[in-house]
Length: 303
Image (tube, rainbow, N blue to C red; front, side):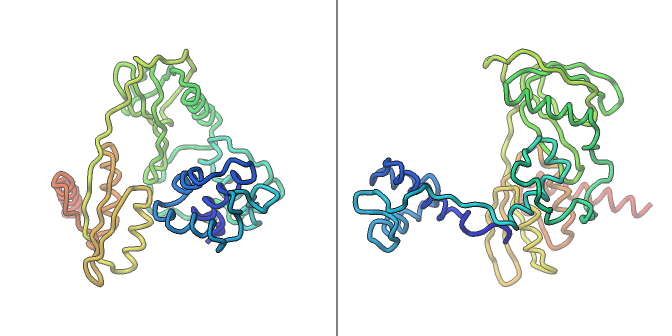
């Protein structure tokens, strides 16, 4: 583990409670509210009781604290090295994060130590000054709730000019590309940032102009056979999605995922990478798409 357990939810909850106690803002109701806001629901059974019965001698009976200062959890050297390593990632640097306090820290690892074998090689050029400028202009528009005028090339090379409201930036690990999802305008669009020729800030948008794309959430049910560490790989591979995992027997697991319909193609590619150890049960539309994809691949090899 890179980060210490002091950054876990229980320590965070107790730290927030003690911070309010040092400020003189803690009472029984606020204690309960702080636990619910910073920890799990079942923590209400443990944390308040431990703090008020003296098991954890951090609170007095009148909800004051013997502590003289608010709790503070400084970063360890290892944690600083990990953060410095993240800041070397060109995708992270697009967001312009501050390196304050990490100037003299050696990174834990560097980007050139990683070899990617499961993604396309024509990813975005994150070092291109024009690309960086476009990315940050879009970020600025999203933060300031402003419209954008975007000139870009379509997938057939046709040039377009489009006034839009930026809705979301999303990253595709398989394609190694960023995409802009728009709201309002003539119609919602998905634009690859690498296809953008120019982007300019316009006036703030009005509420009646904002119409985010409707995103239908789908449920995917799969059965996994835990061979060659497949379960651990699946948990890592689908870590960005809401999921439930049920153990069926010693080797079989049922995995239920929630995903956006717009992400179906990328999810399909992820599933195929597991081969025969992962079987899709529902929905039938995904089963049909998998069968279609496998039939095309079989035909290519047959030729």
